Amino acid sequence: MTFRVTVQQFGVPFPVEMGQTILEAALTRDLSYPHGCRSGNCGACKSELLSGEVEMSPDSEYALTQAEKDGGLILACRAVPWSDCAVKFLEFDDTVAHPLRHLVCRVSAVDNLTHDIKRVRLKILEGGPYDFTAGQYASITFPGLPARDYSMANRPGEATLEFHIRLLPGGAVTPFVARRLKVGDKIKVFGPHGTSYLRERHSGPILALAGGSGLAPIKSIVETALAAGATQPIHLYLGVRDEQDLYLEDHFKKLASKHKNLVFWPVLSEPSKATKRRTGFLADAVRQDFTDLDGAKAYLAGPPAMVETAVAALESLGMRRQDCHADAFYTEAEKAALAPVTPR
Image (tube, rainbow, N blue to C red):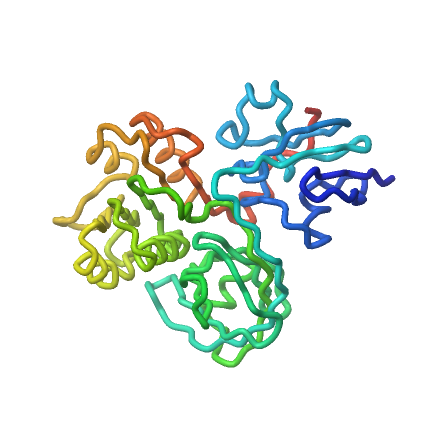
């Protein structure tokens, strides 16, 4: 059975197969539906159900509160239609819309950032130009492997795409990147996606919080803001477990010496030996450094636990939830562990 769904911003209805989510059907047709994690945890695809019936898979309270559900909001990535439907995705401040591109790229460089993170640089061969906003991500397909999502670490407009890919032991894709990917390999890139991007019209303080390889989109955001002449305070925090997990420290120190409005704080959560660095969790570091964040914006990327605790800390300091732009990284195993569809 097939249902027809009309998204107000697109106008023309499209078919959704039984058991398929609204977001899946939209992306299959290369429609630019706002989304992030695709697993009910980030809230990027938050939408208003205008008519019709859907069933919702379980989702995070962070992504969609009970009050929002009672008010008729859904997550497109968890919503399975049970009738013809009409929906409208929520449009946030500084909404951007870039053409979705299917790119063919060649690997131009692969190097080590840490013991388990590779920096992969790509040259676009076909399908460009590729426009995106700092903080967005793309779906990457390596030869013979399933697609995976990785954030661009370079600034928009640069000729070379840059990605930071951390090895996940037992994973289907990252072991290939860590051990077999080589210069000259051709890969496919599809994007851009994501709503955790730089709000260029915002002139208040910026907090940029990265956990591990979540530094990739944060790097793009911070560098793009500075290159555009941003003068507001920018506080960049990089949280990792231990010394061996730190990377690009010298790069950001040099950037901070050049731009006096940038402050860079590496934070170690599990140092293996005595250290003079800051220790603990990013949420605690933020609480130590600020008393009032009303009017500030935050960009967060990293493990889900880090993002959720940091957002809670930011809200406790007066930051509005809508000013917390989060991109949590969920592994395929974490996504697979989610429960099946249950009634809305």
